[in-house]
Length: 141
Image (cartoon, rainbow, N blue to C red; front, side):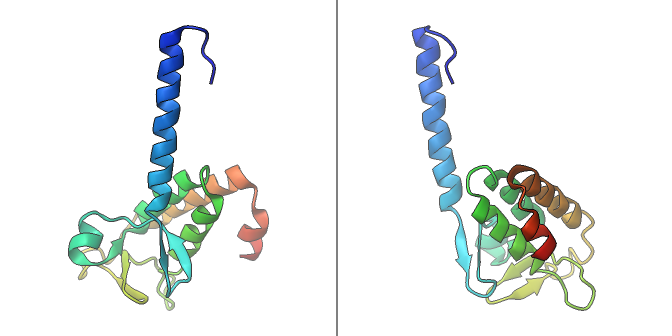
């Protein structure tokens, strides 16, 4: 970004560029590999992961995937694929959290019927497709 010859603008631009690089690196370095799902994902962290031991909710991973599309499309795609893996086989309902080696959770029944997880997932898939045009992944999975 070149906003002119003003030294203050140039220094500000350089500072913003450094900050964006740093935050991009940090964001991507939070990703972990889940052996059960055989996918990388950026965990939600916070109370979910560090106190209760579960990683949820797919709403959060969807937001992370939508952001990751522009930094690391493969990470975004794997996160979206992992989210699809946290569905109940019988109903297709997306579970609120996952833990350990493939355990799915509704947070002790507190989030048995979340109403927004699919909406956030569809938003992230839309962002991924708009940015990557990876229609083969969408159609053939």
